Image 1: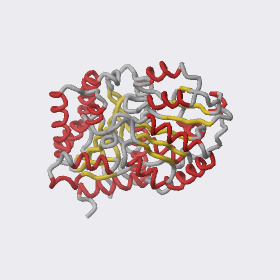
Image 2: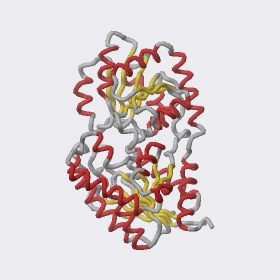
Image 3: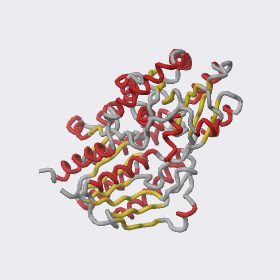
Image 4: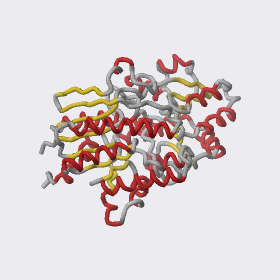
Length: 413
């Protein structure tokens, strides 16, 4: 049964520096391969430099027809990610343009809106209400929980409004999709008991075709003078959710070890602070995002990868970077809430260790233990690769969404 699907998301190809841009682009491609029509409503490309790319400026909205549907791109009102109020205003402006674009499109059978930004839920709901169709709310990170836990949102009135707004969207949605057991429990706790079953887990995919194990001694190591070193790497968004002070303390602890180099590869709101302290540590290398086609080379340059998430955030945020690490065949050390999806996955894959978040002593002790046996790091990486090959592929993720959409529209009968 062929469906017409409307998808509202903050990033889409070519805006692939944002992880959700990669996720949504793959999902659309897979849905098209399954024969469906898709109308995408998204932003003009802006994530890499937090400013609309030069070739896309000049008009607040751009529309293009495709063989499989259409893409509408709206001005994203880019703002400093560390300023929560200005970000909210920017997202509100973006949502207004998205809603106007979305309502001008042909009637879909189902509409899905991605959060964050949470306001896309309002836009998707407006489309659903107008056409009397199902609204699926796709939650990648739970807002306002992440902002509150980070201390970025402290005004009690604003928190109360945001929380009531969040719960209202969950109630209005025909289904809410989340990434993990932690997130499912979080969202279900904000719904009446008779609506709890609408919260479904659909994991983000692991791209085991694009990300493959490669030799450690590769061009990335050549470029950054890492040959012969034991490389401990964090690769991904350098944001406010990550505990980079752990890397700073570990770099100080291992300063006398000439054979160990810490690498922080990525960009984001916390990058200026990381740059400020990293320049005082000769055993810390900081580098920018590499082109997508180089991701295997970058991830493969490490002996050990880090996943860093501050205390309390696992219930509202699931770092998908773990999938890329496992796909690259590398061991992992995670500083994250005990019992979280990431910690459980690492245990199931037998591919590394997880320690309590924001605990320098546990983090450094785990590093020492893992670095004692380099051959075991290699074995952990092999086991991780084998495990992730059984995880959600882009096709499997699309099938899960397809079955949900068919169920909600009644087309599966």
